[in-house]
Image 1 (cartoon, one colour):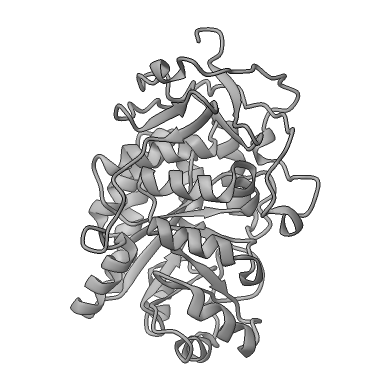
Image 2 (cartoon, one colour):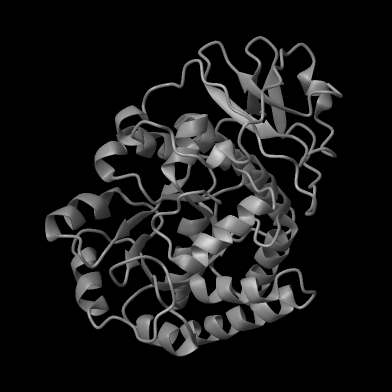
Length: 377
């Protein structure tokens, strides 16, 4: 295996899972490759994992990918390799398919409560409002992501959304688009994000949501991605471009894995679609407070109270309001109408400004601590 550090592994049906194990080079997983057939592939594109499939995924996301060949990005020149616990990843020698190591099946008496569900139950019991923070995974690198996650937990953040870098982030404004670009440039891939989640879980039980585009699930296989995410320690997925009409299989797989499917509702969502979307969500409902893409705003929408009331008519779930909340004053104002607020671009802007500075974690976590105090107040 010394000459096959990067490869694409296919099962009998040619369903692919791409994994760059350069990031996991100290994970002691080489022995699991014994008996597998690994084919080295050409490297025509720097980021094939993040490119769109040529056909609409809405038409094909239930199909398996047959005969597809792909490649992986070069290993990052900087960053961090995490020591994954022995047995976390394994490979089936008869199918050459990379699998997360099996875990004991959950039972009715042993299944743990999802961390998102538990956190909002705790907030409700205390009569407190919650804070959800978004950052781009791998911005500026994955070690910074790990350190920020742990610092945010200590600062009192209730849920952390990790944006999985993607080359075509249609729901995002320029701030988060650039964060995704920096994540791609640092060598971040979906498997590395899951390895980072594993590393976070050694020190923190902060609820984690992956903010992700459907192509990245489709590229691997929805069932396989969900299984791996759950095993790594993810608590929920927010798949931005997966409409509820296409999500029956997805929701069943999420329920089986114990993960929360988080759905977006916008100011322009008509009442009949709110009635369709709200009952299908789990964990919390993400209300997008304004039209358009992510990004900081100078003032908050005046219709938040009206819209959240409509959502409550269809679901008892907590509502988290985001898109455009920029500072503690806005956070305090929006918290009057919701169980939680979401802040992303304001945090990502500070990460971009500080980059690899040693002040990154202390300064960004200090800003986030101020948001926590505003929401709790």
